Image (cartoon, rainbow, N blue to C red; front, side, top):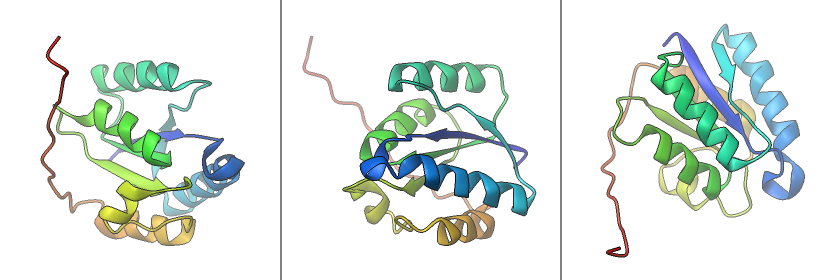
Length: 133
């Protein structure tokens, strides 16, 4: 994997997201992994930045750091692409991270998981539900 896109929700986990994001970035550097920070002031802006990076072929994988809302954003970016998504559980509920056995509020464990699984992508089915309109 050449370059990871990274979207951090600084307000996740009761405001702990920013510090966890900084710790994650430091770990990426220690691992020698390149990343493109796609974090933004709003979810809509992060979605737009992410779409642009994907369309322009700037990233080879996406990491979202936050809670279930960030998972929703990441899934919407990666669905219908071959781009792998990693969730760093840093929210208050972290239901999605827990479901997939991802570390929660544990940056060293998340970095170890990333390093161990860079070439080991697991496919997951996704569906789209609409209200019929």
